[in-house]
Image (tube, rainbow, N blue to C red; front, side):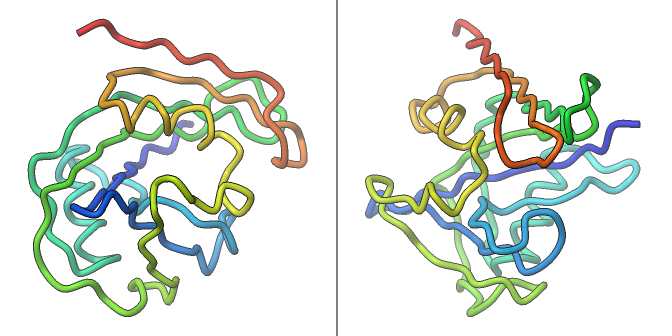
Length: 158
């Protein structure tokens, strides 16, 4: 069964990206964009807005929909985690000191993201998101969930 989630790339006027250091789960210790698992009956955009507000204190508007990131985890061929990817530079509110689950929030210059402390797939899809492209992607991780065995990104012509 596929678990659905959202991810929101937030860029400020100074060309910095907001990242959250996960404090629990499979991503513990890694920097990620904000987002989370979808509730039953929730739309992807509704989930993206709710999760962003809960995790950061920011209200996002003008979400740009990039597509779906499919994750084939722990050496499996089937998709077990699928993520609707959004981005925006349109937000308001006051940034929380820490996310709702205790994870640290920090702005990083786009030119100096902590890639060594992020998921391996980020280096593949993030350039497409930063160019405002629409795309779908598949990432196949090894059994230890440390390395990408194979990936495929399909850019959707505009």
